[in-house]
Image (cartoon, rainbow, N blue to C red; front, side, top):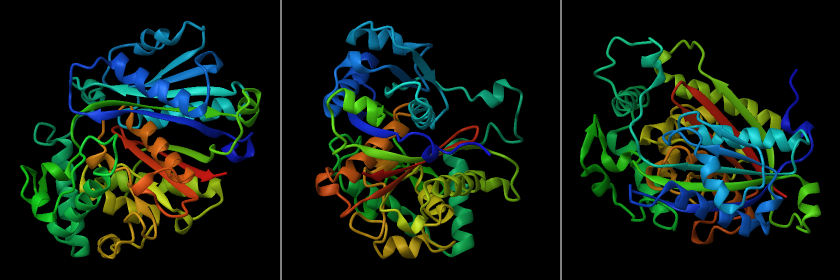
Length: 382
C-alpha cells in the first residue's frame, strides 16, 4: 500500500499570495505571476533565495514560461517544474510540491499558477478519441444537460440550482481578489445572457486571467529561517485520481469526485461532517449541488434544501466556496487550484475578514480537470 502524506514528515502552507483574477487585459503574465509570488514570500516572511524548488502551473501559456518569469526574482538555480493538467493544473502542482517536501527532498517550495486567455484544443481530439456529437457539445451544454438530469432526478427547479450563483456572487462581492465583486439577486442571475439550457452567464465561470501562489514548507525549513508555525496550516492529505468506467457515464465528474474525496478524507482521518470550509470546482452552478452530495456533505438529492437552509453559507454548517468559487472568484485555469489552497489557508488562519467562517479548523479543496482528473486536499489549522 502506498504511503499517505500524514505518514511522512509534516507539510505546511506558510505563505499565500494573489494577483486579482480579472478579465483579459494588457497585463503581462510576468506581472501577474510576480505579484502573487512576492505577496506569498512577504506573507511567509521569506526571501526569494530561501526557496529551494518551484512548481509552475499553467494551462494556456506557451512552453516553459516559469524560468522567464522567476528569473526576475534572481537566478538562484532552483529546479522548476511546469505542470499542465487542465483545470486541475494548480492542484496537481500543489500535490507534487507537498510530496517533495514530505519526502525530505526540499524544505521550502513555491507553487505558482499563472494563465492568460488563449485558444484551447482538447487533447482527446488530437488523440483520435472522438464522440458522436463533438460539434454539438461544449462544456456548458454538457453541464446544462447534467442540470436537467439533476432536476429530473431530485425535483429541483432551474431557480433552485441558480441559488448557487446567488450565494457565490455574494461571497465574491466580499473578496478583493475575485473577478466578479458584485452581489446579484436571483432575478439578476436568471435574467442574464442565456448560455445553454437554464444556464445564464452569471451561472457560469467567466473567462479571465490572474495568478496565485503558495509556499509549501517543512517545520525544519521554517525554523531554519526563524519563522514559527503560528500562521502555518498543515496539509493533512492529498489525493489524485483519473476517470475510469462508471455505470452512469454522464456523471463521471461526480463519481470521480466521490472516489477522490473518500480517499482524501480517509487519509486525513476525518469525515465530511468535520469540514468547516470547502472550495470546489463550480464552473457551472449544477456542479456545486452534484459535488456536495458526492463528497458526503449531504445525502443524495438534499443539496438544494440544504442550500436554501443556509447550511453552505458563510456562517452555516460548512461554508462552500467562501471565495466566490469559480463562478465569482473566477477560473483563470492554471492559478485556480492554487488559489483554492490560498483561500482555505486564509480561512483556517482566521484572516478572511467578513468572509470568515467562524471557528474554521478544517478545510477541503477540490478540483476536476478535463480528461478527466480530480485532486482533493484536506488542510487543518495548527
